[in-house]
Length: 227
Image (cartoon, rainbow, N blue to C red; front, side):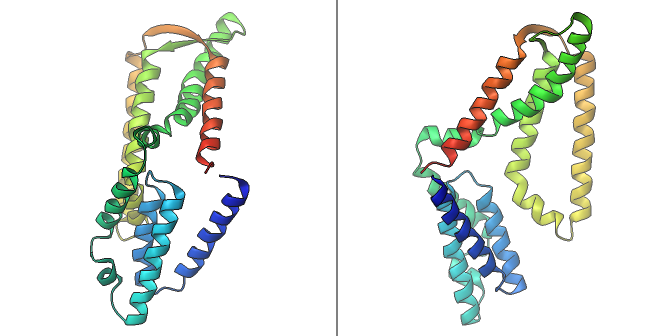
């Protein structure tokens, strides 16, 4: 997708959000549920925008007729309604594209978490003992903690629309507490793993590792903004 297409999509998205503000408060809340589900779904942005604009038209039509938008949408379960669309949209994608959507966040997590928070302290420790070197020692603790982070991020991304709604609703305190508890549990697990399960495995060139991941992230960004 070239810069002109990006600008057009951005303008359409902004116009859609401006139109949404003209809805009643109840209907805005319902539309936000649909919007969040689509924005964080693994589908192309063009497909998502077309679906959202179609839904927004139905919301306005429902307000003009003085009926609930669910009557025009054909369901009261908005989340299931979105999930049905997402499944149908993804059927048109190739197998490799569907796989890519599921793992697209992994290179960035590896670069930021494994490359900085796990390998970074290990590099500093290694340099303090042996002087500057490109090598970094990889142990089982690093890999286990990174795997845990990948699972948590996948879980949070899949539940983000529901979490967002709860954080801005009546269950916000309960949701904040659960997220805080999850963070404390994660820190506890990573500390235990580093203390008792960090068995040395191999050495690798840190700069090549980080460079390859950075290159993959750049290529991802280019591919995701192509037509």
